[in-house]
Image 1 (cartoon, rainbow, N blue to C red):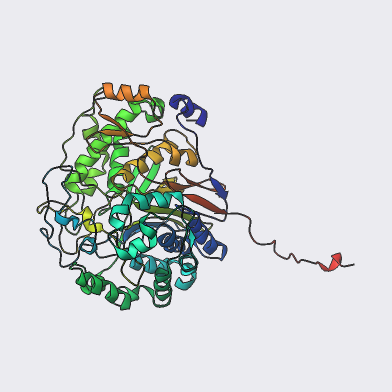
Image 2 (cartoon, rainbow, N blue to C red):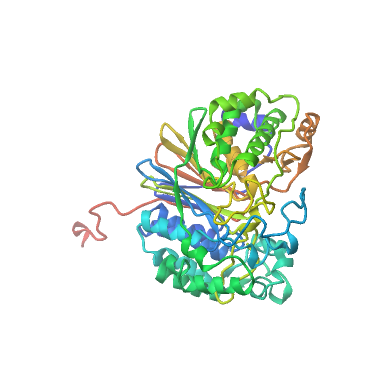
Length: 564
């Protein structure tokens, strides 16, 4: 479908607020311009996409500290120039001292199902799970990168030590978390000076964190996983009565996993496997939608949005009872992603009426995450989604380190006896969706976003925007979204009143949300080698492209014949 055609169907629902970037030698798209620039610097220095990705992430821990940190977790999806794909699982684990009843739940029903006495699983030292990020980043660089760790960390060290300007987006995040940040002297010192959120345009220097990064650049990840930094963190955790111990850090290991693969209208869709739920359920939902003329229904039409809502409900119903850490739960992956299973479930969809699909109590995930998408001119592509879970994680800083740790224990079910219940060493389940689409074996799109439970449904809609509706990559990341996990259907404001009314007539309970999911960013690949990078209005996302190249061979500044 042409761009003009989908705009006709959508009645021009939206206009893009940002511009894409176009390059031929490389592309870095992250949710802060300084982070994108750090990655582009690595490409310009002769590094590959892996070097650029790791430089970008370390810089994001400085300039997007509310979203990502070295004491967090995440999923990495790499496509190599030879066509291989791999997934590096650096997800956080429940501490070895944890147990199914280590917290006291305050309710057995929503909306307080996850809440515990004293909010111990949400804020403070007792909410911290064993981190995987630093190990995953350093190992990935060592195995697949080309530049030294100190080189890729240099931009992060610079911005931590010299400071950077606070954006309105970061200010809003501080404001949202202010009540908790005030409770910790170390974190409030940086982000709540004088008791008020640090103002946009203010200059933030993170001296302690700069020194921590310098030490990591010298010693590598061992400084945390068994070394002096790990001892500092776990000593503090012990003082606070937390579960995280040195044994958790010394025993932590990343896991290399085979990706989930599916097909949709002749495209191959590749994403992460459990404990991430995204690959399985994106493929499942696309299988369901493949039986309908999505493009013909038109982007943003009530009929299209009704189908999206119903397949999201089905996916969440299955996710609740099936997806978890595969070392602890037998996840029926092959069944869920099969075309035959989609045929069975599709026959139950009522095109005229919303339905309730069986699901357990929904478990939320924090929407506060970050994503990067990187490509180089050798065919390497990296999509990484990383987080410390909630905004500012556990909402503390480990004294003397500048580190904001995760609060990943909030993802687990504090009630014993369920798939997502706490068990020692169990990895958290997430909706992270570093996903890629291929056509005839060649990548056409790589994307991802933050947004908690809303991630994989939004990622699917990004794929559909390009495949079904013929949108440009910039339009795809900025297009308005829908979300539901079985209760109200959330719509972004761009969908007009007549569409909302038509959905309500089909039985949907409609709710308008300022945004669904977070700052999606993506790279689109063309047959002529052009890379197009895009980031959306929902975060500070910025694509930075490399074009040009080196001088023509044999060129000298003053050729002999040109001398006078």
